[in-house]
Amino acid sequence: MDAITRIRPSPGVDGRHRLTVAGVMRLMGATCLVRSAMLQRWDADHGRDRPLVIGVSRDGDAGVLAHAWLEGERRGSFEELLRRRPPRVTGGPGAGDAVS
Image 1 (spheres, rainbow, N blue to C red):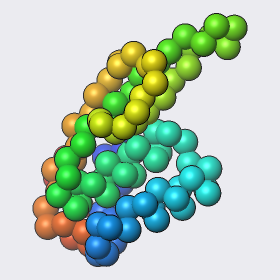
Image 2 (image 1 turned 30 degrees about the vertical axis):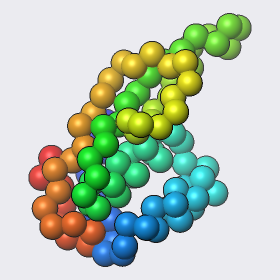
Image 3 (image 1 turned 60 degrees about the vertical axis):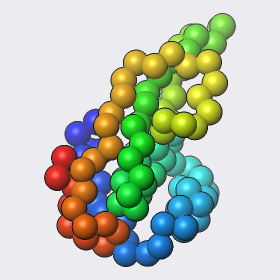
Image 4 (image 1 turned 45 degrees about the horizontal axis):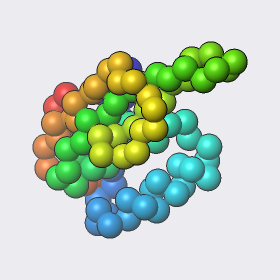
């Protein structure tokens, strides 16, 4: 979780490119945690604060499954374990690092 606080600011581009960013992460095989953390920072840089949520679910013979998502996204039948507030940012896209 410490690595999430070190995510660099998003580039100074318009927030409407969020779907492109999400698509690139999907093509690169990003995990749900990486995807959620990166999009949380993107959203915060563009003025939209969304908590990152981590949850678990039992899956029969497969045991326990974990998943990460941003508040407001479909989460399936996962039980919430952890909620991380969005970073406080100064400026916006292309600006300095998060305050924390």
